[in-house]
Image 1: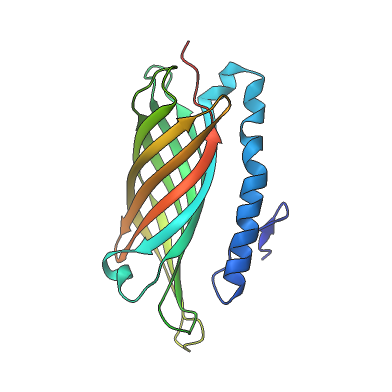
Image 2: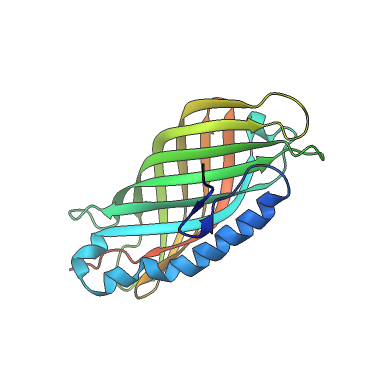
Length: 206
């Protein structure tokens, strides 16, 4: 299976190529980010749909915190504003987390996930550029153990998980900067992320 899409390499899960692939992926994120807002310049109605992308650090907690080091996460998704309740959104987020183990064997846990979510942005007013937010949801993830060079067999398990987090959004004219933290928990799979991202501007209040 190809590990690239539209010229942007997807993060890998083993060996020294992980760092290079992540660096290239983040370069693609930086290049694509300004395009998120461009379709929204033509019609206010389009602002009801707000895509976003981002990346950050990921750390295992609970059982996954034993013997692991800090890794990374990349994500993307879309929010749909609830017209009758300014600040309320429903959305979907796809993510990929890579959490390496201590030592030189290249072991890691890799977690692709897809979550349906609901969120709320506080201080919802056209005059407020700084807006705290909270979001949470339910989804499915895969816990993929990569044994690296240990010789152990790899394992993959699909699990139902819960996610919740919050942060602050900084609103610009046609895009939004996101800074926040998020925790995901499932059976034997718990991790915490701190992230930054960029999304299109929320719908304007009429």
